[in-house]
Image (cartoon, rainbow, N blue to C red; front, side, top):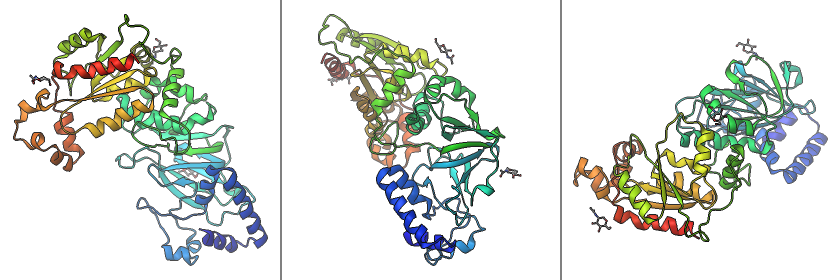
Length: 455
Ligand SMILES: *[C@@H]1O[C@H](CO)[C@@H](O)[C@H](O)[C@H]1NC(C)=O
Ligand SMILES: *[C@@H]1O[C@H](CO)[C@@H](O)[C@H](O)[C@H]1NC(C)=O
Ligand SMILES: *[C@@H]1O[C@H](CO)[C@@H](O)[C@H](O)[C@H]1NC(C)=O
């Protein structure tokens, strides 16, 4: 890195004095701000990826300084961009966005000579493996003289992202958009503007409360926007840490799923987050919301389960999740419960509306689905300071036994299904299995949740 930087700078006839000074400044920034350090390093590093490479000089070319001779070719450079999954670029400085051209221009400050205008394409989506690809081109220009004139000036940062990701149920909505958007934009405290490609009006309407809490500014329909918008900073793509989760040690560092749940409470004006405890209220019954899935992984003996839970000491309400429900109203209803129970599935994502110490009871269907259940809901629940109670059904409680018989590989050897891929796992265990709980076997799970709520 150092070598090629020195070479490109000397190629553009920059004096050695400037070089030394420049390094000192860089060094100072490294110690002051780690964020800048990453950016500064990337700004001059040349890294190619296996994707959409238009023309990449070989490592040898770069080593021998030949990259610069190809300056009129497009080179897959990754300044200001992080190539780890997903693509994410953080551009600080004079940034000009022309949405209808899907282009973001970076204009280096006049003092820095940008030896080679760089251009690279980035996917503004949160999953690399999704087929739908929306590219935004980022061009770093030689200097201000090349910059297209601003038609609108903004003094807050821009976040450019897309909505052609998988959305439609609450788990995907949160996993693919809301949590990554929170990670990317929360620290600006509303002083940030969203530019969205593949804008889906229903999504903006459904989550308007959260979007307004994250940004005080009008949302721009990126793809049809003909303005040249100038920003002091632009983040292209969304940060993403893991499924339905936040890792505090990854940038933007320090955020947790608990912060996220409290942010959601604030956005929806839910009551103060008083931790749930029935310790001093033995006469009061904890309220259990039982999610009745309608199509797959149904709970076939729901009435028997309700009766059993009531006998053990819960007040039970059965709800049927529908996609077009008003989130503000769902949030209010879920918040009034102490526990939420359901067979593994998207409805459990409603735990984001529960209070501290509330319990999630996840019923895991047959087929070695425990790791998926843990990753999608168990871990996030605990990270959000909720109680996580899990129950894995026995083969006898699954409709698979009757459908397939004891000798079927999906019954005898779930590992073999997992080895043949997620599609098969989905087909056998997620789409074609219903559950009939053995209430005797299940009772200790309900008692455990009750015990936790009485702590
Ligand atoms: C935007 O795209 C149009 C059509 O491809 C092109 O003529 C124009 O120069 C582009 N604008 C900028 C500022 O690059
Ligand atoms: C949802 O309900 C709230 C309060 O009941 C209402 O103010 C809001 O407009 C509704 N949102 C949508 C998208 O219908
Ligand atoms: C239900 O579970 C209990 C306790 O594990 C077990 O003794 C009983 O045989 C089960 N009933 C059925 C029908 O499998």
